[in-house]
Length: 310
Image (cartoon, rainbow, N blue to C red; front, top):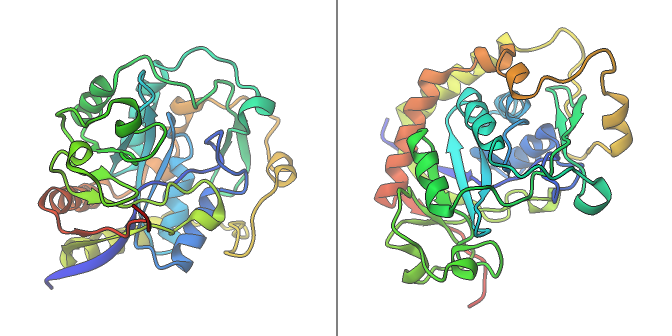
């Protein structure tokens, strides 16, 4: 079948990220990405992966290949993307990372909302620990921890004025990176010879798909995962009316709150790991695709869309 050129966006936030808009539900992310012809979409909330299960189904329903992970914030306040092929791997890593968060109580007035939702946009929890804080681990420690867990490791927006390799460290230290994410064409001191990709770092609906990159991947591997995701979608289609939001719609705070459940307490990562949407995900096909993507990044089979400017 040869190679296919796909459009990928590996840096996006949902309503779980405190700096993200509450309208950024997994369903809205997938709908807008499909509208903007994104083929591969990653969810990378700050220091957490709790919205990965609904994101998996939202993307599969829209014919998008999802990746799952988070944007880690190191002790030096450098941001780092850690991406996984399936929701289970991302949840396990997220539970481990949660232990590195400082015990800082969430204050919605100061930090913004942190909504954990289910696959029909029902509110499971307003997460009680502030997720935007710096973790109790260095940039180097987090990079090797993510790599040891099998993640794609990508320093985020390395040339930005805040929370970047350039702003906090001045250069990219040696590490187990698969690529680097850059806003502009990067200087050698922050690229380290790694392939640069672009990313939207979407926090609001209008950000989705603003800076994707092209990547060449084997067509057979892509098609195998696409077929597996169709089966996954059928297995997880509810008999009730589909309540995902259409591309022109977005939930507000009242709709999320009204959909919340009162009968029990949300069990966090442990509960999510038992969900059918996690346990029925086509992990084998996803991992084959994921390793082909890793190879493409390392070999430079990418075409970034950098922002204009110096």
